[in-house]
Amino acid sequence: MYQRICQLTLPQQIEAVAKELVNIPSINNSSHGEADICQKINDILLSFPYFEEHPQYVWTTDLPNDPYQRKNVFAFLPKKGVDKIVVLHAHMDTVGVEDFGKIKSSAFHPEELLTFFKAYQEDSEVQAEALSGDWAFGRGMLDMKSGMAVHLMNLLFYTQHLEELPFNLLFMGNPVEENDHTGAIEALPELMKFKHQGYEFIAAINTDFVSPLYEDDQTRYLYTGAAGKMLSCFYIKGREAHVGNTLQGVDPTLLSSAINLAINTNPALCEEIQDEEILPSSALYQRDQKDFYNVQTAKTAHLYFNTFLYEKSVKDVLTLLLTATEQAVMQVTEMLDHRLATYRENIAVPLGKIDHRVHVYLFEDYVEFCRQKVNPEVILQTLLTKKLDKRELGFALIDALEHATGDDSPKVILFLAPPFCPHNEIEKNSRLDQAIQSATETITQETGDVFKKRRFFPFLSDSSYLAMNETDSEIEAIMKNFPGMTTIYPLPVQEIQQLSIPAVNLGVFGKGAHTWKERIYKPYSYDVLPRLIRHVLKNLEDQK
Image (cartoon, rainbow, N blue to C red):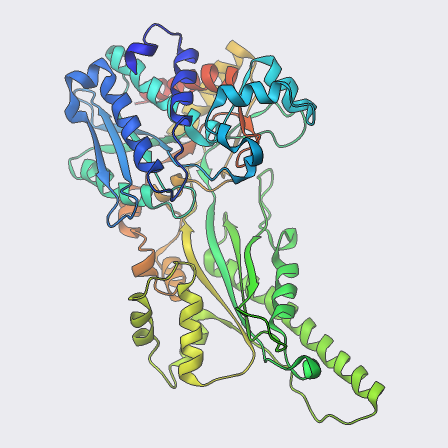
């Protein structure tokens, strides 16, 4: 690869590498795509003259027991006599391409997409951007192979200008970011090796994408921390009934719908942090558990949400969701009581007392309730031997506990499932914060770009696993409400806390991530951003 790009300008180099990476369909959980792109990045690194001479500084590590043979890829550029390291990291996987529809075959071919969008009259904005020559298209072009290319070419620059190398640089490319973040998690032992050798991590720079927040927004947003995330799951059990006696039952789909309406996209349940992009919970899954047609109402329903974490602890957010759930359930039961009373009045026949009460539990409280009759740990260990999706284990465990206890009362149980992303942020006016501030001032003078620092990267990020704000007591609360966490999603808390790497996101700029119109703005992403990152590194060096 180096021979193909060595005579190009920096922006041309980054674009060429980004397109080369986009050509590889590294869809998350695909049979070989993530393994293929790891090999491609490894080959690109080894084509650099410095790493041709020092191949021991480029290596990969396997993800244990991974069915797709995925790997993390690393490259180390040492600075003699310096014990400080800056991590340059990016993820290699993408989401799927079904949204491209009839042009799905072009999803990984930027030139074909550019030609298509130049003639695409259904969206004048996209067409104008395609015709301008300033935008590039393709699945992963924005999220986040251009960011990967920025890191690779900055690393190439420092291999060719060792006199300007401020610190040891550790490049890290990770798979599996788009769902469980196992790439970043499994990379932590490699980072710990450097720590044990006496190195100090002073910064980690992610180049994940940023986008405009409103029409014609030209602000370049920089994030000095990462939002956390928990998957808030609801096991909902009703009381089944024949459709001819439906008001005598408790329909779990009604409960599920009410909980969804109470929580999904509800800003009233959001944290209030001024001038931050604080996002509400979003439903990612909702369905009843009937697997065939009959005239019986459903017995159970499953529902889960993506819930972001910012300043509040997991325990606080769980309490907030639990209260919202209790209120929603109460409204349903009161509604059912009223409808039953109306029905009785209409037919003038006494139907006896019908109990619509629904118990609402936090998982840890439900487990204590079950301990009166069964040993939940024994049942959990049995389920862990089965090949269940990580999201399904908690639901299956509650099903098994319900069967074992023989309790048949309607109930809602709130628990957690993978993935869990810690939240973190660097200290205001810290060395890294000041380095970023100075770099943006320099770049603004050079280019006129307008920057804005914010605390929490609004999308999910591998940066979450490089540091964490959660305390030991908060981690304990998570584990109590996360069935099987130590087995299905073992979070290396001690390693993350020991590393505690100040992690920031200085991202490429574009629009339409995770859509078929995904595109990147080249002038900023391929020219301004790499120089901004170098300024940050230089400013960090000047502060030592």
